[in-house]
Image 1 (cartoon, rainbow, N blue to C red):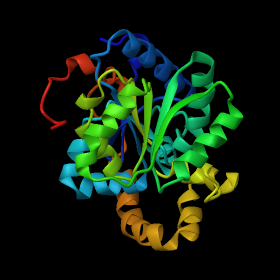
Image 2 (image 1 turned 60 degrees about the vertical axis):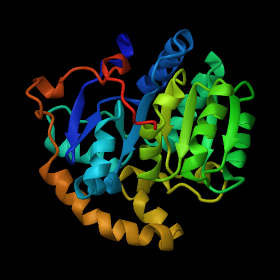
Image 3 (image 1 turned 45 degrees about the vertical axis):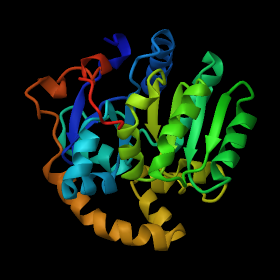
Image 4 (image 1 turned 90 degrees about the horizontal axis):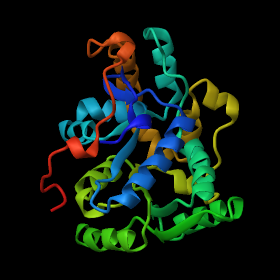
Length: 284
């Protein structure tokens, strides 16, 4: 059983059990899990995913996606509206937003110091390579031991997992978009024993390849980064946000609480430990 840093409570945010954790704590947990995984090659990877308005809407709309998400070890709050909802409705709100496009910088800095190895999987051909070059330039000691685009068939997955393990990656960053990235991570968890983390990351590779700029800081602070993204990608994201924003607002207002499991201020115990999960055939 993982000790120490893994003992984080959760809070229901829009009905999704969201881990109460900061970016600094998450980076420290990544280092701790990587060391434990190196010592135990049969250890299952921790599934680390993110929640935002679109995820909340899909969580309630799609039972299969809901089941996948509920098997994650950590669900962090990627969207600022989630933090704002807890400030309004919870006794102990989330301390901060854990945006993946921000957290990767904390993770890369910590990994460069500790010798943790990354593998980038996702996006169009060449995009993740450009993002990897960006982070290598920022952190010369950072080990990115593999890069692969996200255009592959299901029958390719076993080979990809073998490549990741052969590269001795500690953290696999999966940028396939939701729900593909979450289902890929869960389906292949048992094929990736010895890897410490399967970390979903959405469009992070696109951001750091220079294809798209982040929203201005003031838009991020007031929860309007989605509007900036929709303006930059109207075809891909405009329709998506039109379909998910109103349901997400409804669920944020009606299903956000830190008294969901009877504990004090949401103190319902640690995130799931891999050794406590029964073995099954999900990778097949």
